[in-house]
Length: 65
Image 1 (cartoon, rainbow, N blue to C red):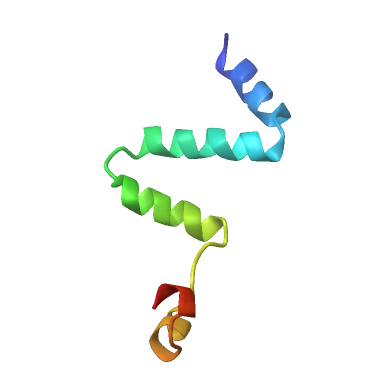
Image 2: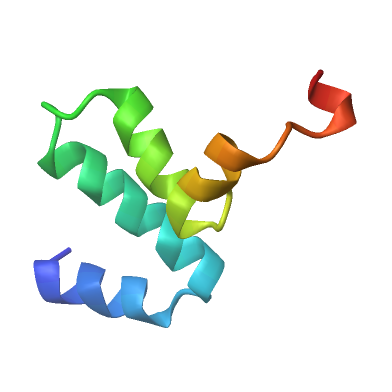
């Protein structure tokens, strides 16, 4: 299978599947980046984060106290 065929197949994937492939490729291209950092990037891309101002100025939710 050629690179062009692989790229074409990736382009035809649904968005969720393409994201999985992109993340796997990122890990392969950047093995020097610790896994915790990569997961942090992914969490941020997925919208799983809290703004720093919120962390510094508001009490945590009851479930985390």
